[in-house]
Length: 67
Image (cartoon, rainbow, N blue to C red):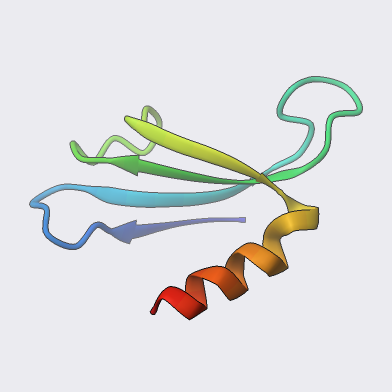
């Protein structure tokens, strides 16, 4: 599963969201990957974060609270 969202306030920027299975090699945990590319290059974001799926619900709640 992956999704690309236009980055507000930029001309070409995107937010890319993907589920990565074993991103650090065999038996590493699945993560949600969130990348930001100001140039619109989904494959080479300037910033990215990997969130373990076990933390996802809590992170989503924290983001909702910011809104």
